[in-house]
Image (spheres, rainbow over the protein chains, first blue to last red):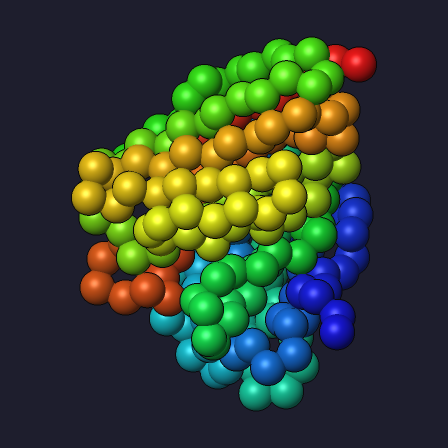
Length: 113
Length: 111
């Protein structure tokens, strides 16, 4: 009965490189959310996806960030041309279809050098 | 948009003490969750409590939706309770929308 899986757990990128973060929701969950936690701050919503659809991307930065949740495979959060300000913990959550409770993965800690 | 405010921002307790954490929100909500972020950064689900009262061991929570607040009670605190406690809400026309987080209460339990 695996929970939400995220990988990698830690990712180091140099400025200008691309970062790809992966999230596999809990079994049977088809809604995925991405949140970002900047150092010493709370969590901020980024994007909400269902299979093959973006439902709400109101929290996504306008440039360099994109997300997808294909029919098969994990959800991907992609950050192009990373900058130091992208250094943060990125959390994925999936939604229980019965209780509407969100369950979080362990997060990916991105460090941009 | 909705405002979610948590108090106190910081709390230091001696092991064995009790505490109450508060979450105020500025609009009607569909869902409300409490989380514990442990010192390793993991977010642990504590309660899903849009209204009413729930208990789980030494922890309990109460949400009074009509008065727009929720309380998290920790009794007989232990050092492993240390970390940040977040309240988060979903509001608007759907109950599957994004969570809006408060800024958290940082709890330190001393032995």
